[in-house]
Amino acid sequence: MNRPPLHQAGVVFDESKILAVAPANTLRQQHPDATLIHAGAAIILPGLINAHTHLELSDCTRLCPPPDSFVQWLKGVISRTTQDPANLAPSVQHAISTATAQCLRFGVTTVADISRQCHLTRPLLRQSPLRVVSYGEVQAMAQRRDLLEPRLATAIDPTHASDRLRVALSPHAPYSIEATGYRRCLQLAKDHHLPLATHLAETPDEATFLANHSGPFRDLWDFLHAWDDRVPTFTAGPIRFAQSLGLLDHPTLLAHVNYCDDDELAILANTPATVVYCPRTHAYFKHPLHRFRQMLARGINVAVGTDSCASSPDLNLVDDLRLLHHIAPDIDPQSLWQLATSHAARAIAAPNLGVITPNNAADFVLFNTTTSDPLREILEQPQLLPTSVWIAGRQLTAE
Image (tube, rainbow, N blue to C red):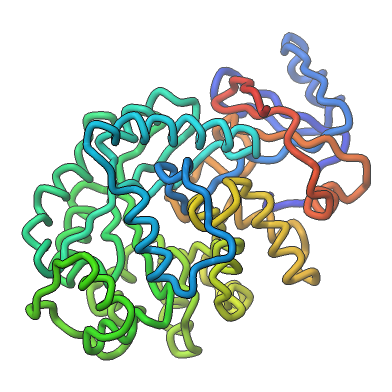
């Protein structure tokens, strides 16, 4: 996706790795013994990477119309997902099965999954065909701060790691984990070479809560009956909060960043952090226009994600790109596709994904197209779905 599409071309791969990319006639001469798979009038794209999602919420349905506020929505999600422990495992199993089917149907081969129930999701995802970066989510604030260490132990447990499932760590958000917990997560990520992610600047109420523990997020803690007054304050907003903790000195994945001013953009531009924009979720909550254009212009790595089915209609990452194309029709389609391929691969520190090039993983998605501008055609034809999906050289159903 870093170069224009090759026409009348193909890919040669052996088991799970790409060997060559070239015009089809050249490949036939260089690899006469290769098995020919004719794709017809199709474009072959790198397998798509969903850089921010919550797969265990895939059996949720987003409320329409949306709740009046993000915190009201969050209370609803908590109420809907809090269940008897006996029902938790079957519920998670159904959600992961639903999510896996959707990912394959929509051409997503790799997911950056945030999971509170990673002890349940990881064994299931390890058995799936998807590539997964499983960010064990950690919340530890106020009366729940003593849960930090046991939750960390679960989040970084390597038991279910494999060549397709990487264990990662996610301190949840500035309104759910204290500075001490963030620093502990950062240190563990460094010590164990784990990818790190957090939700940041998702709503303007984060800054208010950090500054004086007031506003909707304080209402959330009262709803949970778990507040105490020993939570530290921070008056300069969530992005500078992350900077003060050292999170921005690390290649941390920052989910959303819906609210930032020019000075905060300058801060982010001088870091290795990635911003993951979730267009349909952003629209659902009626946030102001996201500043992804300015981020890209300043050299900030921006990727896209679907967030969860509790805030987005489904896990169709291409529909998030379609919304971006509608919002910013002047941006070259190839640049938009990079947000779900090469930029997303950088976000999850997976240099062997996101680009169809020799030695990279043989992960592909095929779309039938009829025009000379297939990247634009897919974005402008919402009915187009992948015709086939390949992961590690193995063809999987896209239905």
